[in-house]
Image (cartoon, rainbow, N blue to C red):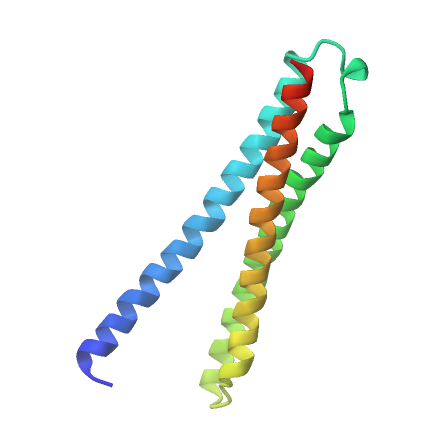
Length: 133
C-alpha cells in the first residue's frame, strides 16, 4: 500500500471513530432528553393522568426510550470489547477478517435497534400528546 493510501486510511479511520462517538453521544442525549421531557409533560401539563386516553402509549414510550439508553450502553461496551479482541488477534497474528466483520455487524445491528426504539418511543409520545391535548 502506498504512503498516500496509508494516510487516507488513517484519516478515514479517524472520521469513522469520531462519527461513531458522536452518534452514541447524540443518541444518549436525545433519548434521555425525550424521556425527561415526556415525564415533565405528564407531571406538569397533564392534569389527571388516570383520566388520559391510551396511557399505555406513554408507558410504552418510556420503556422504549429507556431501552434506547440501555441498548446504547451495551453497544458501547461491546464495541470496546470487540476493539480489544481485534487488537489482541492482530498482535497474536490471528486476525480473522470474518470474525472482525461479524463483531462490527453486531454493533451495527444494535445501533439500528437503538435508532428504531428511539424513533418509535418519540412517535408514541407524540401520539399520546395529540390524543390528550
